[in-house]
Length: 115
Length: 115
DNA sequence: GGAATATATGAACAGTTGTTCATATGAAGA
DNA sequence: TCTTCATATGAACAACTGTTCATATATTCC
Image (cartoon, rainbow over all chains, first blue to last red; front, side):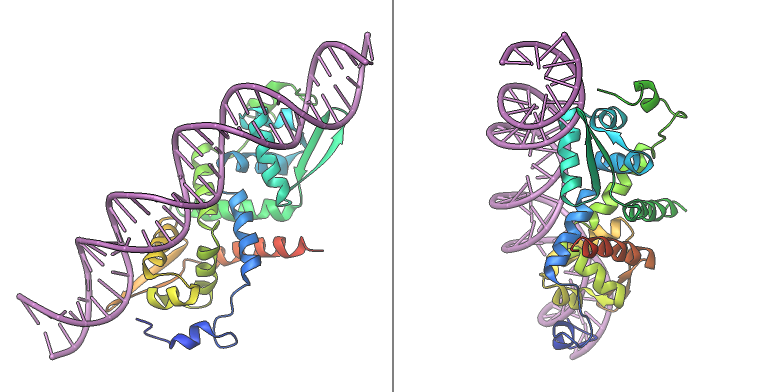
């Protein structure tokens, strides 16, 4: 094996392939992981269109309030959503349109596969 | 709960929130899931820069040939990579730059979080 | 054909993730 | 303060995922 290259070419930095550092990769993987669930994707899509409180969101995505809250924590931890409190309710919204465009780009990929 | 809206507004189609259909959401979740692993992300990054055979790739990302092959199957199943055989070796490459830009966009999000 | 090399696959096991249920916190109104 | 409503959290358990090891397939060279 290692046919087209010498091992050193692959492994040593500054030669050919300089990959993103491990810590950033982990964070990146966690971010994609937060999007790797249909329920959380529904939440992301809903929250990209309008601000919603947890109760409304749980109805929208068809989950219990508890499950919704757990998922929101995952999204919050990775700063995919932001929140504000208004009386008894807490309103959530996508953190920025960055996230929505990640969603759209992946959607484009998935849809164009079917041709 | 359900403070700002009536339940019907949230659930009935054509009113406010029309979400992507379930099948597409599942596929989308699987796609993000394929990117939700540091090892596979290293593979994606490497294969966005150049075509590599499995042996070279396994050295590059620091995994056994078997583990690399398993991960490649995951990426292949979701059409994130394409491959061609050349003699004993099989060469892999990102399916399109679509995927790289997904990677870049998420990377941007992760990096800008640190400010 | 048989040996050697490159890649792929299957079973198994540890580690992780999503949901539920019970309970806790926090805010508003009596 | 006591009750009620909205959200959050913790423990527990089933389902899923990543790795390893053993083995299978595929291609080349002798």
